Image 1: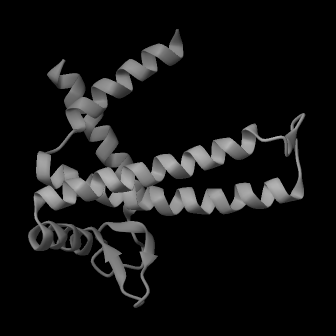
Image 2: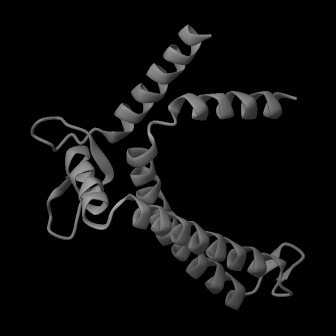
Image 3: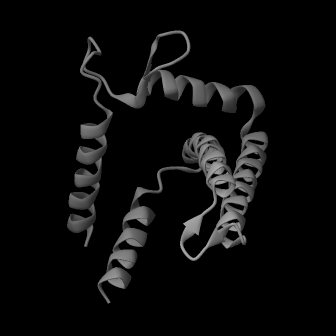
Length: 149
């Protein structure tokens, strides 16, 4: 079983590496999918780690855990608003009114913003509590079995 976990972990890392390489980076290092920030500087994994660790050092683990709870709550709210649009009378028989479509588009953007916040605080939680890869693999394997049933 440990061999299988090691193999899956290696496969996951390979996939992550494949999608995180920046061909423009001089050192060929990993970068986030959005490679340019507001300053035009590349967002490397090393820079990301410094930022995440800096936030934990500045505000402390407990505050960052509170921040994670806050951001998760905001994502839940954004998802609930999105669902409310789909459940509204404006969405009739599979056809959406222009007003509803505009609302869905705005909610999609809001969801992406909140999702970005959740991803950031989740990475901080990994720094605080440790690498969840072992449990992630177990959860993915369980999901795979459920999908195949």
